[in-house]
Image (cartoon, rainbow, N blue to C red; front, top):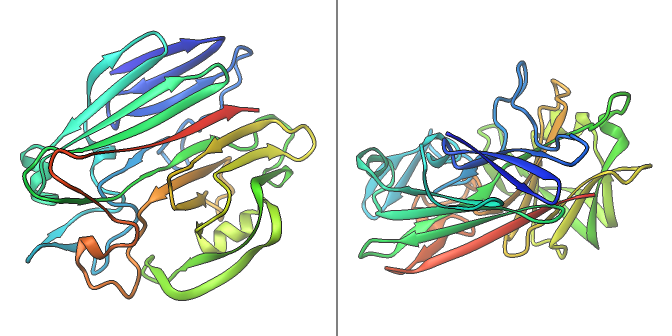
Length: 294
C-alpha cells in the first residue's frame, strides 16, 4: 500500500511493504530519493532491523544457547507493516513479531517507523519496543539512497560529502567475507570536513564506514551550486556511505547505524555485536534522522 504525504510544497510517497519513504519531491518536481531502477540496486530506503550488515559464519548468530540464521540487514525490509497512525504530513508503520520472525529472531517486539514531512524535508523516527518478558538485543540502521547526480549534465564527482566538524577519522574496512576487520583501517578524513565522491573508492572498498565521528550532520552537495541534501543523525554511533561503484550507479546511500556487520573477532553471541542495544521488558528505544533539502 502506498500513502502520499504533503507539506509546504513537498510531496513524499511511503509504502507499507518495508515501512519505507520511497520518494521525496520538492515544489518544482525535483526527486531526491533513488527510484530503485534497473539495472542498478532495486532498494530505495530500507530499514535494517534487527541486524545491520552481515552475520558471521554464513549468517549465523547465537541468542542464548541456540543458533539462528538471518539474511543480511535482517528481515524488516521484506515485511508488510501495518499503518497505526496517519495524517496529511506523517504516517506511522508498525511491525510486530509473528511465527516467521520468531524462527529468525526469538523475541516479541514492535517496531514503529514514523515518517514526518518538515517544511524542507522529512524526519524518520524508529521506536523499538520490547513487548516480551526477557531482555531483547537488537540493532537498527537506515539505508537511505539519494539520487546523485541530481541534474542532467552533472557527474558523481561534482558532489562532495561535507561534515559539520573538521574530522580526523579512519574508515573501517571489510574483509573478503564482508565482515568488518577488527584491526584494518584506512585514512580518509585527515583534519578535513569533506571528501569528494569517487566511484573508484566504492568499487575498491564497497562501503565507506565511520565510527565515532564528532559530527552529527553531513551534507551531500554539488560543489558549485550547493544543491543536495543534508542528513542529521545524532544518536547513531556509526555512519556509512555506499553505492555500486563498479557500475557507476547514479545514487549514493547515507546510512546512520546503531550496530554494524559482524566484526571478525566477535564470539558469535548477538549481545556481543558492536553497538548492540539491549532493551529491558517494556522498554522503548527511539532513534531518528532528519533529511533537509538544500
